[in-house]
Length: 469
Image (cartoon, rainbow, N blue to C red):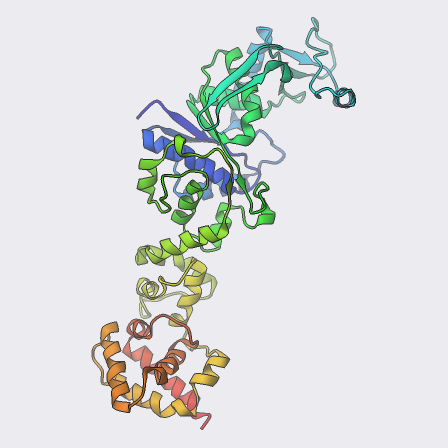
């Protein structure tokens, strides 16, 4: 295993967002490609907003996508004593100081700075205090350099630099003793020996502050790769108003994890003109150099197209396992004496775009009674079809080859013997067996249902037609 160590560090304040999932995926792919370590860390220092439900949603989403982690999950809430140790270290070395300014005082300073056209940064009024003020609460600020430049070579964006005079003295511990994000993330990444930080480019403004903290604490500075955000069709940051943004919502909508992985990695990364990649190909071909510098636009139609591809080419046995929950939601439980679900799926894969469509398409195979679409029955199950359906049912009873090819021969011979065309018998048989005029190939349907069930459904349809005579 190589020395490269990467991490995904979500906050448990909601579901696993598709943007976060893509960040996790990029980290996971690079770790797997280079034989490195992928760490999962839960950044739950925001105690008020962090929930166990959100933690479980994140873990479930990661597992569904197949992004297994090598270390963790670690929880920041377990590491508060460690953060306090490093706060004290900075205080003792004069690299941090107590700030006694109240929130009201800080707001007045901010308003004054804005009124005077200055950047609303902290004015350093407590920076030079020599003595502690007893019985007054305080936050702790990092004593940042007031001149010079902080620069880094971003692995996606290129060279980035900030004037230190633009950076104020960051609070690293609140007055209630809780640490803040920009401090905890530095401690965590340093103590977990994270070598490369891949994250969204909304974190770029945090990076110079974090670099200064690394240096003040004597930690090696990791490499940074800031990836562009994911936008909606209106080029605004992807949010609920653009549709589903939760990874697990897409699972519940009938999307396959491999389609989601393929789509997310292509949403900002490219390898020539290739669109479809197996997981093994992604691991082999993924590089940070392939990540674009501009934001990706989430395209639901493209995701749907990919999902249809993976359903069409998926292993029916695996799809059957994934389909069971969707069928059970619809009150269907395939049994040993009914059609084999994997075989049913082979008749539906060609046209289904989601597992929901696959489930809906499979229902007619398992219903004890076919539900006739009113318009379909009015057209195809009439008195005119009575003799044709009766004769076809009799012919089927004596037929032996129940393969799709054999059933095709059955139809051809029947049409020849009756002097009719396929259009005069096929649609009626389809409605008799499926209840609708659109279904998988009728030869496949009969092969899956088998002779006994096909005959039973035909006889019921004949009885239905007889009521109209």
